[in-house]
Structures are given as C-alpha cells and as structure tokens.
Image (cartoon, rainbow, N blue to C red; front, top):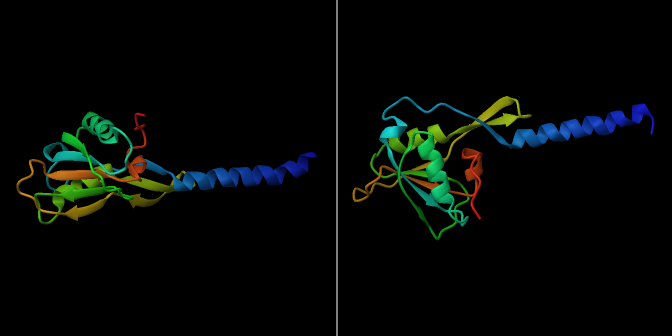
Length: 152
C-alpha cells in the first residue's frame, strides 16, 4: 500500500470514533436553584435493573456528591429508564430538582452539547413514606452515574 491509500481508512476511523463519542453521555449540568436544595430532599434509591448491589453503590456515590440518601432497596420489576418519583409534592418540584441535579448533556461528536438528558419524573403522593423522593434505577443508569461500576 502506498501513502495515499492510507487516507481513506484513517478518515473513516476518525469519523467512526467521533460517532461513538456522540452516543455517550457527557458533562454534568448544574442543579436547579429553584425550591429546595438537593441536600434538603430525602431520597431512597431503588434498584430496578437486576444488577446486584447497584442501589447501594449508587447511594454511596450520591452521598459523596452531597445528596441526602436515607436508604436503598430492590424491586422485582425491570425498568428500562431511570425514574425519579416525587412522594410529597403534588407539583413534582422535589423530583424535578433531583432529576436536574442528576442530568447530563448528551454530546455530538463528543464535543458539542446536543441535548440535556434527565431521568423521567413521576408524582405518586404517599404521606406514609419517610422520604421525599424515590430514585428508581433503570437500565440507563450509567448515563447519570458514569463513574459507578457495579459490584459483581
């Protein structure tokens, strides 16, 4: 092969690498300053993925980042998407604050911000529950917690 024939494979290799970067989740966005601070919202982390000890691992990561986590648990149902459920506020402000704090920016070609990605938000009022918000981890948890590796 001569020098000129290396140009096309190299070009496609660089293009492919850029496209892979476009799919990955990137930089964290700042939490919302409206309403309560994240440290004032009680959170329980629920594992909806089937990955062993994932809720516990994520909970410790969240505590280290300033979240107020009260407990962990597992659920038998499998979730595709991560969901933040507000148990106390009819407007869903607690869940919105947590979701925005967990949000990431999806990047195009690994560089340019494309869209903000936040967990889904639901409201299910339960006055008997001791926490404000349930964070139910779905299969997409690694977008919101890229540094967390499950314990096998």
